[in-house]
Length: 146
Image (cartoon, rainbow, N blue to C red):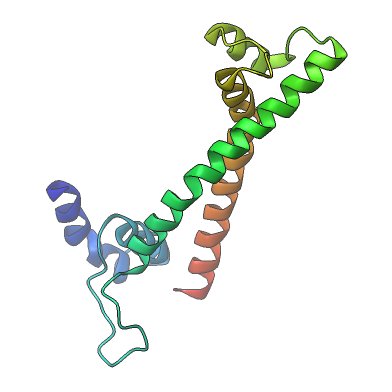
């Protein structure tokens, strides 16, 4: 991390005053994500805890892990159950190819089959949500110069 911190410190002037001034919100967002912010509130605040926003959001992410696993399992269970009841042998498209490559099958009673099948539906949606949310957050931060 030493090289990365040095690079950010060495190039900060380019983003604050130089040719890349319009990209400063993006620079600041990445810097704050990777490292603890160097500026703090100088006056008294209503928060009396030593935890910062990045650490708090880490706790939120850890708390979401059981919910994500449940979403994987339930989505896969529902899909495998319907496939078993309707007699569908394999999932169509790339999901079926991945399931066949992993060899986990479509048994609704199998934990592994449900997690994999559900993950193949959940992860693309989750990835798109994260990418779109990040994009719009960067756009609004740049427009507001925040």
